[in-house]
Length: 337
Image 1: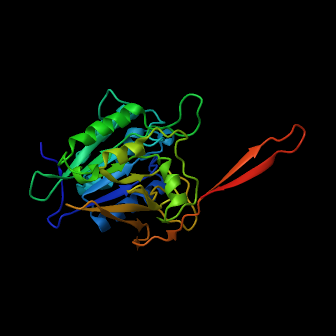
Image 2: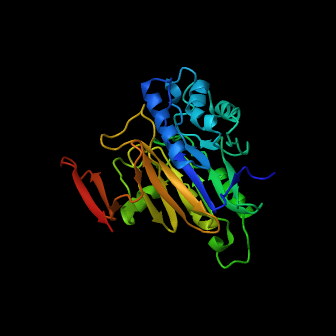
Image 3: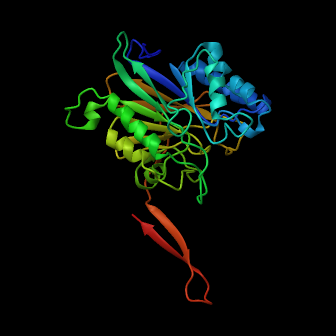
């Protein structure tokens, strides 16, 4: 079956990443979110919209199905194809991930899939983009369920389970042009990955590599690193990773050859920062090239093509330790370069 996604005749393929819309019950803030979504669609005319989680405000929704349908209505009305992954809030209401997937699949422009039932999560799947005028696959898009909250004795946010990583590696192996190529990056079809919760490596790239954009809050990554980024490096196909979750971070940087990009949050019904407008990240692929362009569109209609440069500063670890009994605990500050 041919892919519904194709590069344009000029060999371009444009994606609009919408993240953290937190649609609730259609109040004034949701209407502002809808206005922004419509602005993005009408200005950028994407070939695909990717919703990277927290599409709805889960527990605040009187009817989660209706909230989801209203959140994606701008794409449906314009006939623009879209796909989604879940965040940690989407299924906090009366519908679980499987039930919300059924709601998604009822929409004519939806490309989301449940993915394999035997692995962790709902919504681990791929979409392929064919080159213009042919059935050759020019790009692969991975959609992954980054889960919700930590389990067991751990706190914080969830992580990728080992079966998800194994599924990714097996899937990546299917999209190899030339298994005799000298390196995996030469052999693999260019790919992008989309999910909600940032990997721990998003912290690393900010601390140790030049980045472009803003970091106004701590990266809300899992406290356990199960190796999804290492799998991306091993397979050699993923050249860009796109996440949401952090509403007032929007930076991007390259870590071990992979560009890690935070989206620009688009929901008005959730926390933000004064002077940090809502918006969306735009991504453009070019057929036959292992690179992409990305920029931001803000809610006033302005484009940000050149985000401010942040030079790496290393990492300062502050640890408190108790000294001799009866003495005051003193902080130890150590700088890692």
